Image 1 (tube, rainbow, N blue to C red):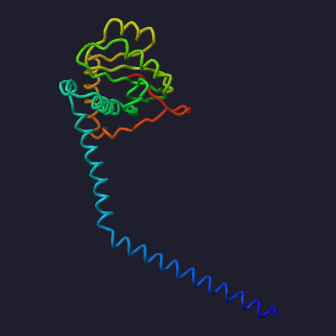
Image 2: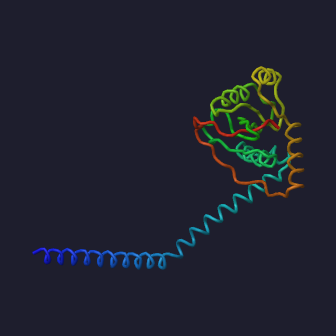
Image 3: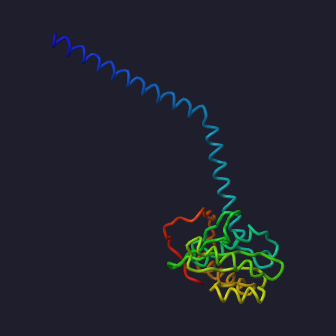
Length: 215
């Protein structure tokens, strides 16, 4: 009886292995058939993904070449993306926050171990205290050591006073132009390849990330 039992067990194992090999072989054939049949769709999807990436890179490089006259014509989000290219060419790691619900910071920039919250104000008039208040709050929310407001215009006297009281840096039109000139010098040395697509920042984590020095 034991010999018959052993023989039956061996036959069962052999049949199971044969079935498994057959199933795997058939599955591989089916997968190959699907890939061969659907390759035009996969190719089209790949082309779309690559095309979006190329267009995005082209747009960021075009923004990087913008001067103050072009800045004055930008909308708010485009100005934020433009500042990403400026900060990156100046050696910062720059990230965009969500367009809505940003809690007072449009960018978070990092360099030299210091993290900074940035409020971007593309405006047609002097920027007031609200921008300073918002970025001062965002500094703690995004676990930043420093805060900055950047505008293509000027700041009201009240905004300047509040910024001094809260240790918030202000870049007005003149300062922004100086940074643009400095970033162009970087391009002249290293070539215009520094503008890369922006990274979107979600809600801040509880862990401390590397940060940046004040320029």
